[in-house]
Image (cartoon, rainbow, N blue to C red):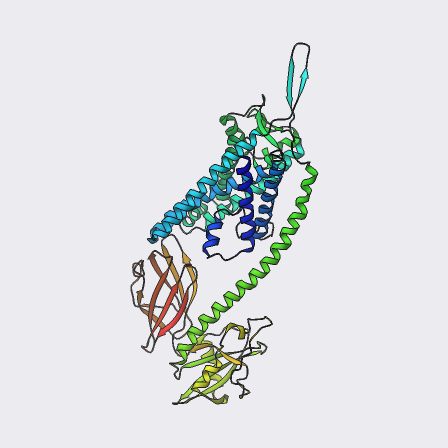
Length: 565
């Protein structure tokens, strides 16, 4: 086991350090290595520190623990036992979540790759759990309790050294932090799971959200302490301080004593009774916490963990800034592409109700310019030019109102149809959202002072419906799309789903008008993971418009665009 434990700790820690810098989440390499990652903290922040800082820190702790264990010839096991116990909790939760995700995805009719991935990941998780379990038992056998012998005339007595109150306080704080760190993430997942959220919220509504959290915390806390102290005789914090839970004879307590000890932890004020030499969960369960013999590195050396944490923090903050910069670029580029995909086809079907919303590449103008189509000939288009103050929300109706008030005073310009293409950004590097030094220059229509630096940001249809998706609600097997019509009055005539797995007609009959404020909810039932539907609306002038609403991989994010009028 000596070499196996060393190799395992080095293998997992190096993977954790590598994945701290490697962020290609969709790659096969990341998916495979993530199974072995030191993932005690997810993307959530803990003590206002990003999860990646904690991941790198714990990976480095595991690496140091493995090296100390190897070079000390099995004498130094504190860090290794602490990290192995934390990983034992992590992989136990991973196993539960894998089965939950498996039964969740079964409703989506997955292919063979999904089943293969589930079986492979489950086998690996069970293997790692078994290895951690056997390793902790093996490492425990390397340690024995510290004691002194009193020799009397006719007998002798062994007295075990109990840990002091300061160490008990340290155990309480560190175990609570570790428990909170892992249990909070698990509870956070449960509270936001589409398939469990409704049940938990129903329970919370009958009692209170605080009561529900207390109940879940007590349950997880009981499982946490009972599992560790019954299997290994210590919690993670006790491993770190080389302490152990024993009975009055120095032997491993019975499971009933451990269970009694664990239940007593939930009694109010029990956690601090050791400060007053009461030790309720010790005395009533007839157990005690005793020291193990120190066989490894002196405790002073472990203060080097402080600068190690500082190095982790600085390193991961630098990596996080680079990663955030890349993610912002990808997000901006995706938004740019989606915008261009809407602009290009809209320019081909311009009419007298069309309006071009412009934006300056320098992003330093106090007003937003609009070009309203007046006349269309074979080669050119005549526009009315008007401006609105930036910083306000532009809706179909508000723009129409401002246009009607100023129509007689507006300047007219003519633009060749071919020149409209010059007013479209060619790449994200030309947009105002790109701030790097290699920013590309946007030419546009530079010979016209009115249009210099202006590009087409959006194509709007006046005197027509203008649908947006302003909210999405997801439950276990249903989806509600909250639509708003910012244009003239209209009603939904029909819904045609391009995905047979979702029924959009079960709860509604069409045609259905928008409310007086322009709102409407569309409810679909079925496999809501991906959806693709066409919504046909009829306005007050009896004109039909078809909007395509779709989502891919994330039901909470939807795109909507006009595809036919």
